[in-house]
Length: 500
Image (cartoon, rainbow, N blue to C red; front, side):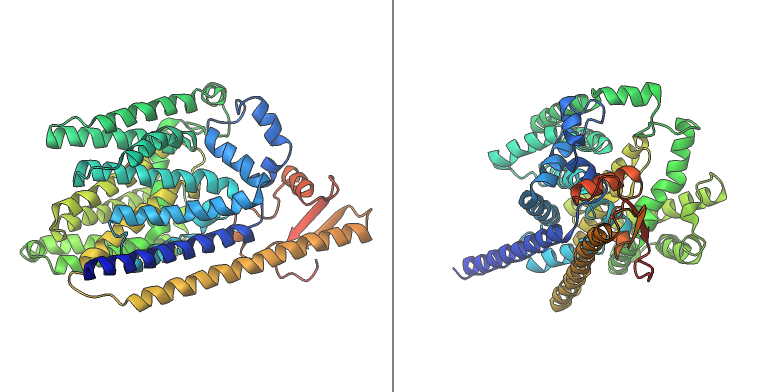
């Protein structure tokens, strides 16, 4: 009776926290102005695209439809922004098997708020990116969750969950090209693991793979991909001007090290710190020779030192030449990955937890490898990688708690402070955006014959995706949305300048 009562109280607490997270993100959606492609989708452009069934655009059919509806229906845009963002937190808790622990919800929430600013701007910082990157990330997490439960924990899922799994295996293919391939590879790998490890055929995984394959065919049957492949286009190229091999070499030496490792060095350092602590508590590690222990530890230390002393200091992420820098990136990242893999093996005793962590690391590798079909690779492509890093960190933190308690009040305080910082920042952004529009309208009214009007950019623009129009077309879409004269020309000066 007492246990049941405790579970009920815990359920109420988690429900309240999820509601609070939903309200936070919904309010963030209200504060976020439409920008860049959002304004394009609001214009007559969406009518023209719908007439040809996206044939001249891409195969992101569901993502595109979401965007069109969202920019025209404000309340749905705000609510969906909140629900999808909360859903990502919810799925993190399910994969980590912490869904009954309230403090972990707040931890996941906090970790998602310290997302690198470049990734945040490309995903949560505008709606067009959000509906493709964040929604596909949520679906990917659900597919990973189902596969892990099917092949590792052998838990029987309710019929409704399995049906949802099938539905998402199909519709999840119609958001992002690389995510489409990611889902197919993850599903077939899960099926093959089940077959080789347990000598059983998991027909649910096989069926979902077949459904996902159908979705993949539908996406890539879009006529524009044929044009991209055979006629050349700057949009979603398969290779750059130097060829597929040059692109692949550049990707593994500069782009992927930056996106997967260096841009996420903070959370990776947290992961490394937890593994080091667990290693020092592990009998298997302690009984290794001193040389082997040092080799493992140096791998953990090399990455942050290289990042602080060389990579960040000399802006090596700007160097895309294949040479010494690229080679150094590969060595440092590969050495760090080696230490992570070995560290998990030596420090985690529970086999299911160990396999789960390895599955997540493989998922990161698969996600990164599918980016070979994407040009240019955007920061938003690494949202799923960061989210998986969050999952790995929380699983390791569960192991850490076996040896040492964690101050829950610190987690609560940190999440509250971060939430207040974000809300304050975007309330200010919203205020300045409205002020800027009113200033423009007043300038046009006072000086209708003026050729170019001058206003300031918005504060914290690095947390958004081009909130100030970057060319003539985007300015015209901005004018259309804000009901300004169509041919209004605007010069945007840095925020805080005095000559606006």
